[in-house]
Length: 70
Image (cartoon, rainbow, N blue to C red; front, side, top):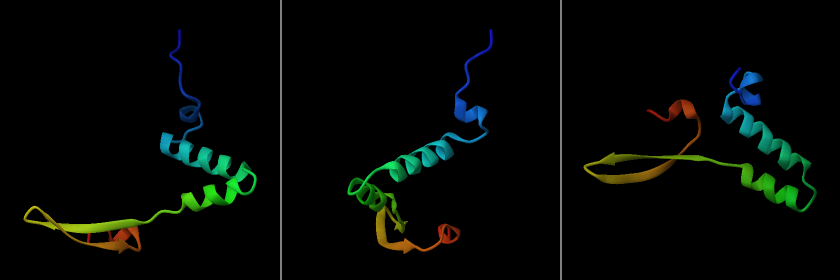
């Protein structure tokens, strides 16, 4: 007997890729005004802060993920 496999694994994508695609598909299928509200929630940004001696420094917005560790 074969073990059950989730269909996103059979499709060759990761769970995060599956969830991202599924959520954007659901948002695109919504009707107004729920669609514009859901699309506004889709936007995100990253902040970084340097910790020194147990205290957090000032937060700065990250423009590119390439610059996160620098």
